[in-house]
Length: 233
Image (cartoon, rainbow, N blue to C red; front, side, top):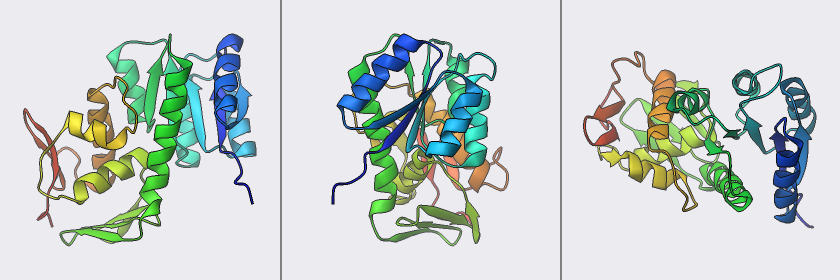
């Protein structure tokens, strides 16, 4: 039996961009639904349950950041931000809301397809291997269920956050540079923004640390990168 195509929700108020992204994604075998404002995007998300959302930040009415915030409250569907905003603060704001990646305008539609595939691949990979990883006595990561628990309590992570945690948990105590962590979560050779890792780390700390300002599990090694402690209680 042939597998059902993955569904992608494309949200942008520029009809030409919606058409371009839709045509390339459909050409790559995806099913595409579209919306041109925030309210329609949320309705489409609840109706069609997409596997991934491509979301413009500059939307009429409800801002894209508000849409992303609502999507994150509703679930963990992967989000790729699509925006003309180039300021670092805008990219970080979206990533801190839980977006998995971003693409700035103007963009290559082929790169967009590659990014979609990469994000879906790492979401699938997070669930594909049957094992449980333990880090010290505190952290337990169930790969097939894509669940992490800290001190016995479950924490909800996006696909990207989960894969980052898994990557570091496989080698606790090892220091990873931002570039290495980017390589771990991106299955496509495109230019990436290393500071995006900082936003993902901040999100993970908020979820797994008792006090994110004084992290015991996910530690910063100044001037180098990050490590997951193998001994934190």
